[in-house]
Image (tube, rainbow, N blue to C red; front, side, top):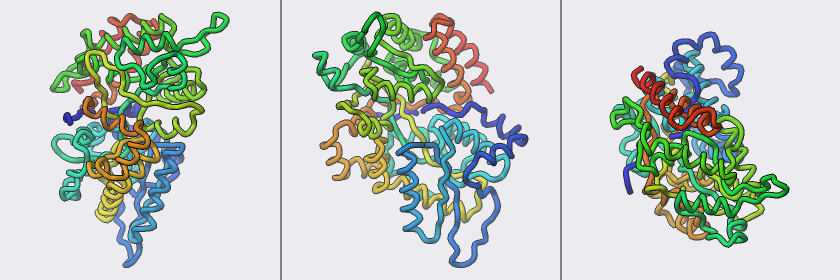
Length: 441
C-alpha cells in the first residue's frame, strides 16, 4: 500500500489570529458550547472519584448518535473516567469554538480536528504531543491514514473518522439506461454516462447525470488524478499553475456547459447536503461525496446505491479526509491520562469495526481490516470496502499551517471559475498570488 498524504476543510479563522484576538468573543463562544471545558485547572480528585473529561465532536445525525452510544459504552466500562460528549457543529464550527475556548481557558480535553488542520493546531501549541502516552500503540493504525497525525516528527493525533471521496451511483438508473451499474471508470466515461442519464422535459432538466459540490476536497482529488500536486514538495509555494491544476476546472465547466452536471448551490457543507438530497430524490444519478455518507445513503435510498472509485484521468487518485482525535495541551496530567485512555479505546479494533459498519467511515486499524467481522461485512456489502481499496491511490492533503487559509482562497477561486465570474487562468493566477503570501507567513 502506498504511503499516503492528507485533508478536508479547516475552520475559517486563522489559528494564530484567534488565539491572539478572541478575548472579546469568549463569552459568546462559551454561550454556544453545550459542554464546559476543564481548561488547565488541576483536578485533585478524591480517592475513588472518577476523572471527568470533555469531548467535543463535529458529526451530527446518525453518525453523532453512534458517537454518543460509543461514549456511553466507554463510561459504562471505565468506572474511573467520565467522558462528557458535546456536539459542536461542523468541522469549521468546532475548530473555531475550540480555539476560542483555549484562549478562555475552558477548552475540552479531547476533540476532533479535521486532518489538514492538525499541523496548524500543533504549530499553535494547542495540541498535546502524544509521544509519552502511545507506547507503540501507533503501530496498530493503517499506515496510509497516519500521514496527518504527525507534525515536525511528533505524534499529535490518531485516526478516527477517516474517509476518501467516492463516486456514488443510482444503479437502477444506470441499468435502465443500459450502462454498467458499477459506474464509469474514467473522466470521459463519466461524461458519457452523465449525458445518457440526463433527462429533460418541456425544455427543463428533470434529472442530471452528475453532480458534485465545487469543493476543495474533490478539486484536490482531480488534481492528483491529473498527475499534479497542490503545493511544492517543500510546502512553500503553490503548484497549480499548470495543466494538472487547470484540468479539473476545465472538466467541470465543460460538463456544466453541456447541461449534464449540476453544481449544487450553497457554501461548504450546505452544497454537500443539496447534492446528497438530490441523489436520494433521484434528481441526480451520480454524485461525489464521502465514504462517511455510505450508510446513511444506503439506509435512505429507495434504489440500489453503488459506490465506486472516483473516475480516473491519467490515473486514479484521492486525498484522504475526515478527522483525527487529539488531546488538548492545557488539560491537567490526570485529564491527559484519562483522555489517552479514551482516545485509545475509541480507535481500537472493536470500536473502529463498529464505527465503520454503522457509518461507512473506514476502519483505522490493520487488525480491523483483516478481521473476520470486516471480511464478512465486505463480502455481504462490497460498497464498504471501496474506500479501503482506494487507499492504494490516496495522497495526503497539504498540512502546512498556511494551507488552512489557502484552502479558503482555492475554494473561492474555483467557484468563481465554475460560475463564469473568472476564467480558469485568472482563477488559478489569483490562487498563486494569494497563496505565495499565505505560505510565507
